[in-house]
Image (cartoon, rainbow, N blue to C red; front, side):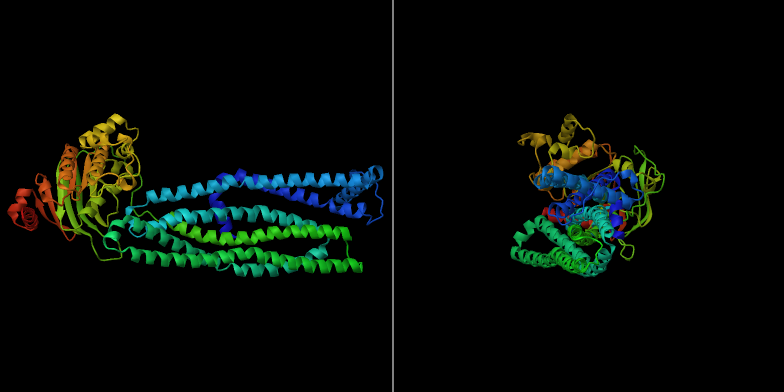
Length: 619
């Protein structure tokens, strides 16, 4: 019950009117159902002569209690039917009772339909709301979160787990607002008709409930395992699509197929058990309900035959019909209970994302800065990804980058270059030390305004499966085609774009795979040019290109760097000879700084790297 209330409280806040409408219509459906079945009693008692009692009208004003009001109303109905029979005959009375039954059934089914239709906006709305919450959270979480999570598992939580929670919410609604209403009203009528029979039935029902409950106890655990396996499956698919070139190059197709099939078979086995237990709810509840009816038929019939019953034989038939109507809501309750077990397991997996903490520290009353005026200052900076480990990625970094200058970071792979530039836009939180922009510590700066000052061009060009126009205009509101074309011309991209089939409306494909590497990189540069940031970070932007593409991209980069403060991570040292400051990094520390000529004269690490690269290129 706690889980059900938690689900309803979290996801139904904006759908109260639909909940109220569904409850009201389900209540009407139950009442109409009772009235339609009520025609059984007069049919049996009067039409077929099971009683010779004559009834006369009694004014309702003589009723003093609810019980007497019901008795008088029932008496008047009998009197009206007797009058019909005497005046028009039994056949006409039968027709009128049939019309009454059809009318009540029509109102019942329409109310039932309305009650179900009122749940449709809730179902679709909850699905939308949960996905929006997860997506908003995924966007807001720091980059460091994704180094510990698998993409496939996150996708599974956003698709499969969300669907399970959606089904759980609707099942919860039916469990709390539809079925209990029907059961309570039916049981109240049964108690009114015969408290002795009803008490006897209620003693049997808990036994059935315990047996049904035992079947579903393991569903939550198995459902959690099943959703985790779905996450593994999506992760493997994502890895396969991203690594097809390597898979084929190493003839590893069969190895991947075997691994996938093993995982897929494991998923099949797990979900076989889940679905089998889920489907068991219906036959078990129906069988137990039939057993209870059989016992009730024996017990109630025995009381009537012995003359110890407070209700007549026709009323006992009506009693059985009402009781049989309770069985379906009980069956729905048992299935809803299983669905809620599965939904709760999925909800816990979703909550692991929604409750994930954003460990990026932004102080209260963070300031917004619109321009960059003086310098970037890094003081006594230390950083490691895991606070519980002793492996420092950066150690005692001190560096001042003045406005309008170009600073190059060089060093072997793993020396901490990319990590250092990722700390400036606050992608990760600093472990110790400080980074200042114009004297403001970055944790005191509003994150949106901080990143608005910085443009990035990475080693791997990142494009979205959209048009070239939208990729260049990404992050810039209301960009015009003229502005996009101007940025593309500066980035040496306009000429090849115009030659494409749809020009700037050309779809670049998944990750821009319909373009060459040089074309993708020039579009990324055009995107940075359009943003027009005062601070620019270039992370080995030309290292993965061929010579011809590199020349075009390098020319675009030089245009981009004009009048900007630039931090360059360089693989080819020949491209950063003109940098104002070159910082040589090794094992997370800056071990040398200076211009190209100064570092060559020092004959240190930079000179060694340059000689190795120069001699290699020369050979």
